[in-house]
Image (cartoon, rainbow, N blue to C red; front, top):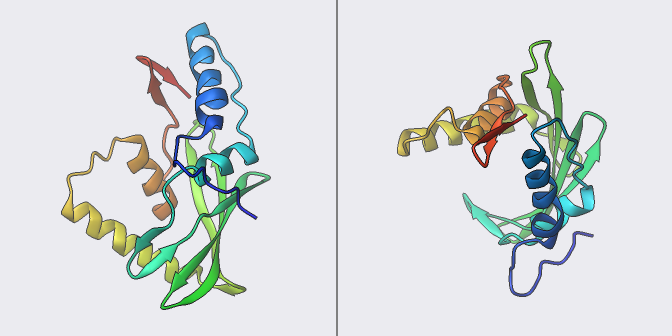
Length: 167
């Protein structure tokens, strides 16, 4: 069962009290460090976000993340035309010899039915339409992640924290 979001929709305590301080302190030291991300913590952060979300006539309820070797599984209930079903997305990550990261959507299921090929087509179409409507900086980390998820494009997993680069 997913964690219940706080009544006042505050920012996750996991993010503010654990993850962000670990990141900030690690960056300040100026040397390599490990950042441990917990499954419960990520689910707390997700639950603290605003749910449900609506898109294309579907109401997406609070999903949950399960860490698996080399990736994650995201599961969540979706309500469409009064019918609730569970959508499962299996993600795999891999680094290549150059240190570039690729995030792959391995499988998308509704209930027990594999809809991966259809989901890829629909997701690419929706993303392309979104790109046509807005000016998206393709060098932005989130845009690179989207390109990796949709097209298996590798990217350099580097972002800035306090004017310092973090890999």
